Amino acid sequence: MSTIVLFEMNEVPLAILDHYAEARPASALAGLLREGRVYRTMSEDVGHLSPWATWPSVHRGVPNS
Image (cartoon, one colour):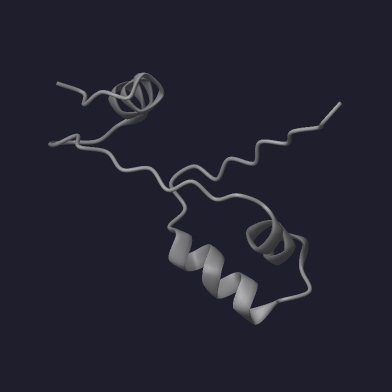
């Protein structure tokens, strides 16, 4: 049996995580980025973004329109 741990970083740009991992290569986060899988998501939403509109569209995979 495999164990899956989902580590979700809401609205944190990957550039910030990459910078942290470079500055602290022995950190747990650097290890996760190095050994885990990172999925980059994109949103086609336009206009004002808010959790009420953005997260349902992310989880359904469709724009907020």
